[in-house]
Amino acid sequence: MTDRNQTKESPEKKAAGIYAASLVKNGDAVGLGTGSTVAYTIRELGRRVREENLQIKGVVTSYQSEAIAIEAGVPLTSLAETPKLDIAIDGADQFDKNLIAIKGGGGAHTREKIVSMSASRFVIVSDPGKKADVLSAAVPIEVMPFGKELVMDSLKKLGGTPALRAAVKKDGPVITDNGNFVIDCNFGEIKNPKELAKEISQIPGVVEHGIFMNVTETVIGKADGSVEVIQK
Ligand code: 5RP
Image (cartoon, rainbow, N blue to C red; front, side, top):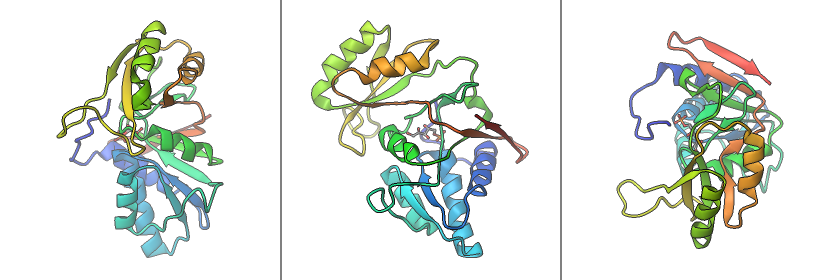
């Protein structure tokens, strides 16, 4: 799991983030994910807008990506105005060889899923530590506060160990940008992520889970500034 308080530069994340910005073309509508890796992409897109006169419009997935995009000077739009996106770029907590990803370390996965599903191309930017043979990261699940008990109980019945995500510098749970809670559920090794995704979705009170099956390519940054690109 990502260190959410990471403040120091990561050359791996930077390499991936900056490379992904080069995939964006003039005229594109771009989904802008959340997290420390895609923050490099958003800032690089801002540089391209300023220095290369790149004409793009971004759709943000969180208050965090909105603030970074505004500071970087990336023009923004909404899904209401621009429902079809050319490309979405985002980070991940883990992904496997089939490019199934677990996301939501920042609690933004519901909007990230809506935005990425609105895009023709969905690029994950990552450092090498996120790649796994078998997915085993805890799955973030956004839940309506009213349904928390039923969701926790149902997740246990699915073999998981759920934990309500606690806030930092606030007593009590994390509240998402949508006003909900997040449950991180550990399932150990996830042998069949597709089936698990379906089962979690069926629990009443679940707003969205962090299993993503719509990734089209992954950019893994290396410390020397090079990248490995894996296409689906
Ligand atoms: C936010 C996410 C992030 O993209 C994911 O947690 C990766 O973050 P980082 O790039 O900081 O490692 O899913 O909800």
